[in-house]
Amino acid sequence: MLPADVVGVVLAGGRATRFGADKLAAPLAGRPLLHHAVLAASAASAQVLVAVAADAAPPPLPEVAVPVRVVRDESADLGPLAGLAAALDALRATRGQDRLVLLVVAGDAPYLGRSLLDGLVASLGPSDAAAVLVDGDAWRPLPCVVRAAAAAPVVAAHLASADRSIRAVLRTLRPAIVDEAVWRTWDPDGAWRGDVDRPPDLAAARRQEAT
Image (tube, rainbow, N blue to C red; front, side):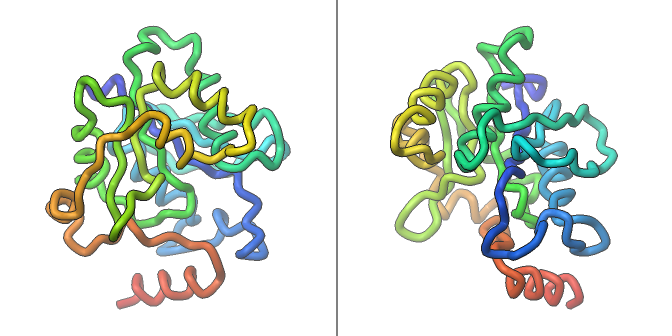
């Protein structure tokens, strides 16, 4: 697929209740936590959409080589799926929208490497609607890639249902599965699995940066 068809989507609309503060603004390695995910997505995409909560102030964004813009969840407290829906809505009038592939990452994941994200995008076969990475005995919903045309109606249906999760959307799309033996060739240490949910996670990430 052409790089121009890949849109990075950074999900940054969470309330961070387990962290107790605006974790995406917390500094890590000299920049806000959110910037790490935006930089990673921008390296593997032609443009990046940062999905924030409906009532959130626009976050400061890093300077990158591709266009980056903020989109807002239409409804509060609907979880990460609302961010994916906001990104799909923002792309609705985009030329060639039926060819677009969304590279969806969490805003609190600071260790997403270019090789891993490129590999995940490349793993999406012509007949696949989505692709995910295996972690242990199961696959994880983020990061993932989804075809915009296939995902849009499924996301809308799940937002109106009792199961408003990205995992449920992916199950419906029946994703291609990238086994650990494959993604280890892109990310030998499995760094992509690291995220920041609580203050101790951030402290651990800072210690890792310091070594």
